Length: 350
Image (tube, rainbow, N blue to C red):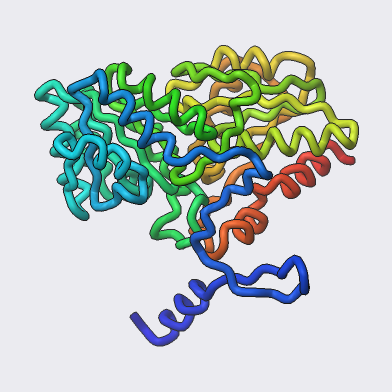
């Protein structure tokens, strides 16, 4: 590394600062603030790990596997409950996926965890050749999706959905909250073939519980209806669009929120039916690059169905993102409630 490039890299990873709410002075913040701004909602601890433990009580074939990241993907909960069914493969993602394929061939249902960047970038070919081509029931559940860490491009999986959508036989999920992670984990255990599921870890907000939501594989569901704007969202961006809908309602804008946790196979029928109804502005919102994710999947579905509506995307830019504190980065890249609200108002010429 040259001296100039080292200087640029050092500056790039300097901790960001935020204004202190009491003094107004800017203070340094951690790159790993583990908050998705849940707005005071109830949070549930390790929903994935606890759901897997519960499943394993009656499913002898379920095993857990990780690449030295069980603590950071909530798989440690399973490892503590079922140590004889947990495999720590070390920092070797290719080996992890190949071993999972071998266990699946012997009749097991492996739940494999790592970070989303490592599964989508580092282990892609092994997933494709060892798991997806053989249509094996390996469930790949990955933490730190999109912009859910401030550690920069090495850990920010901003293009994972685009990568994984292109793989044949692979189901791709982006659940919203603790409720959906719990439900989806149980559903995919019985789903034939491989699954890639984005994973929120630690204390995960309970967003959908108040709506009586039930996850169904391959189904988009209307969480809140409205007449002016139709948000189509996935992941924690459904939490953000629900909050943006409340903020916009206070200004006389009625917003619907259609949650689409299954990115592949996309529920094109529901999406096209809702987009066709009422002449609403259609806005996709995702914690992913504007390239190749939910937005472009929805746009393709609308185009093929010849549904012609005003269409906009809220997503991360097609670039390597900065490092820093999550609140700073989310505001910088336009995925906070305030930024979403302002963007929609500008599109409506308010």
